[in-house]
Length: 171
Image (cartoon, rainbow, N blue to C red; front, side, top):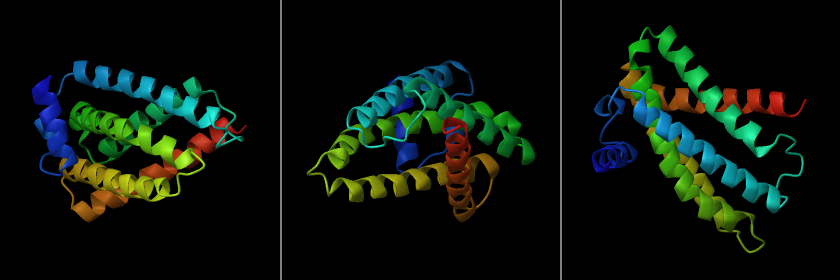
């Protein structure tokens, strides 16, 4: 467990890539489940503060949709690049680092949604930029591309996922 966390921290610091993680499904399943639970918690925070009243989807549906979209979109990208053998490690890196980001996001989310949380917006933006850099680094290693292409892909997939989720949850 400590080795996995150490590797994930190195990925967060852009020192390692998904190839440094085990290729099995066990850790991937653990990280997906943990992400699901943390997403439920964050959706509950948003709904309880009525920060996004137009959010029509239940937290559970939105959390599952987020996870499925990430799996499908990353799978498509790796398949198109003929790198589908790297799927488990890539997803493990993404969900593992995503879990660490979500843990950092929870207090920032509460701060930014509170009435006195003007500084939370800047923290959210910084965390989002760091997240794009980490995902870009993961794509860099998984696809054997430059960091610029990896980050561009991370940003592009974020918007594709966002618009698909928006279309599916506001119908």
